[in-house]
Amino acid sequence: MRGAAVGRSIGIGLMYGLWKPRVLGAWRVPAAGPVILAVNHSHNIDGPMLMGTAPRPVHFLIKKEAFVGPLDPFLHGIGQIEVDRTTVDRTAIT
Image 1 (cartoon, rainbow, N blue to C red):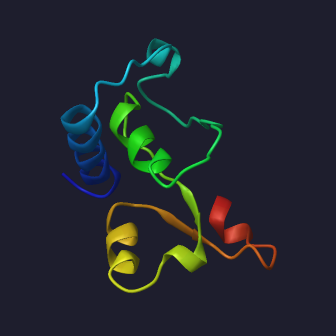
Image 2 (cartoon, rainbow, N blue to C red; image 1 turned 90 degrees about the vertical axis):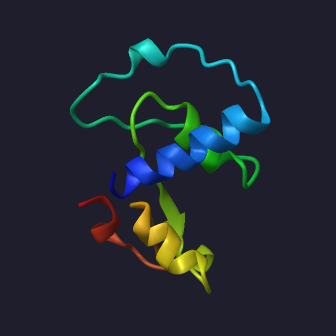
């Protein structure tokens, strides 16, 4: 298990271990190929929640300020993408 799959396992443990989320419309997400999930984000738990409830591993664009201390290697390790919001960062989407 690597990268986003590890993050998904962590998210599943958090979501289904602490809560009982109800997932609607997961069947609409293709099993393979590129997909963009556009979701509202209002709390720090939103990322782990989506990782645990999405039907396949996900990668997030995350502000570079979040990649500090022990979170830096962890976020990179689970396949998340660091974005510098102060400049145009085309590498984040390529």
